[in-house]
Image (cartoon, rainbow, N blue to C red; front, side, top):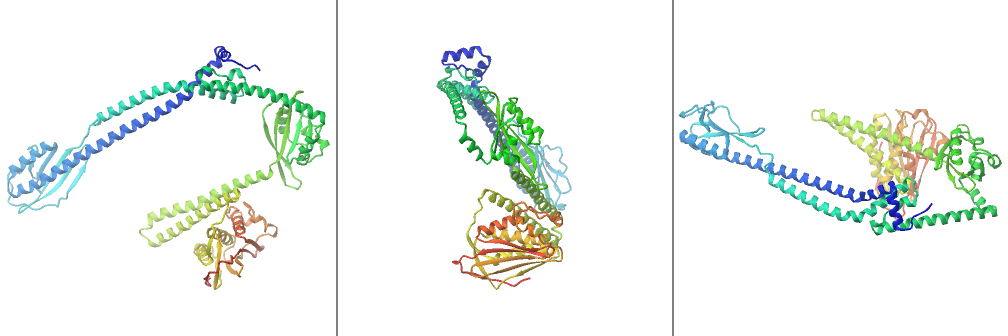
Length: 632
């Protein structure tokens, strides 16, 4: 590959190559995109300001007009009462007409309770020329305001001393022209025009400075597409010092690549002359399988790990083809394409093989990439056992699905009981109390599920820590009693608390201890059939506090006593398939106990029940004790 060495050479390439000319033309993309973004933001801000100014002005003008009409109605009502009491309807008519004219009212009149109009702004609706001595009060009239599309109607009662009641009706327009604040809009438009003009000037100034960076950016896109021609990637040095520095880097890179190729060739020759003994020993020490394929897809080298993973001897692998030990035609074809040069990119395939035990599966991932060799194409294959990774992925996916189901159930219950509370709560206090109780329980259930998920994340990251403080066991036990009493009654289970007269005060993380005990007691209630009994027993001495959760449930097989403390594991018992669970509760509980320096142990017999014992050491410096209670 030849590379340009002078500025004139780069310019000549730009003049002769269409791709080169396109690269130079697109050098302004950085400044153009930035200018368009800033212009869009400026126009958006100006449009929003214009709308807000117009909206605020119209609202203030409308409010001022409403206040003017209300003030006119109030003043006219006071004058009308005095003039009606003085039996002076003619003066009242003049005042009504003058007020309507002065305040731009569309209608204004004073009427008696029977509907007779005493005074009217236009004079055409007057039906009572002389006032009677007195008139009945009629139907009581209240002060009212009715706002319509473009007007407001105000009705005010009048009290005439010695005669009776009357009513004043005032109607006025409140329509406001849409462009009432056109001066402000014009000013904002002028500001926008000046701002865009200033931006255009700045853009013109920045364009020349940024064209070099834009051209370099476009050159990098060609590199990402796999093009390595130095003549194509160089940019015109007329774009500035950045372009000159970029061209220098390209030339230095080309020189380094050539030098590295020569060094690799020398190392290959040296390795062949020495036999590669140390390299072969190092490859055999790898824990990953390593295989080298030649141009005909035959195995020329295999390390010890590859033989173990493929369950074959080295003499069976070396010199043959992978199809002899790998029963997957598609995977063998994919690897052969890379080795023969048909595919020059890195490729990974996964193969499932039968394990040593019946029903056991092993998943191998074979990653291959081409090798550069002077005597032809070749490929290197790295073999990894990803069985545990796939099992963990499946367990995690199952946990996500189960957690989604468990989150949906309390959310559905909360929604249903909220609807019941809205519909029947005000009329029935018992229904309201029951709904609030269920909503509270389901909310706590949601909180526990989310807490379990967060704790799993902490466990996987190794970031679970304790917030040390004094922990009173009597408060924790009382909290458990309140939370699980209703659940035990609903399932017809006996929930018994066998408590000592005095409790030790622990030093630890109260919230995490509550979570551990909550999981133990929740599991006991969940897997104990109706009619059974669950007992919580607290005991201990000066060094260790123990809490036993004893149930008369279905029991756990002896071979699963340790497995159930693993994350995502659930006992293989057909009776629990219909019972929801994430397989995390016991794992979290044991992790919390061990963080406190204690542990959780299990004693269980099938169909007789289980006993989970949580032991936590007592810090000697904490000597304060609390009073306990015997309850059942």
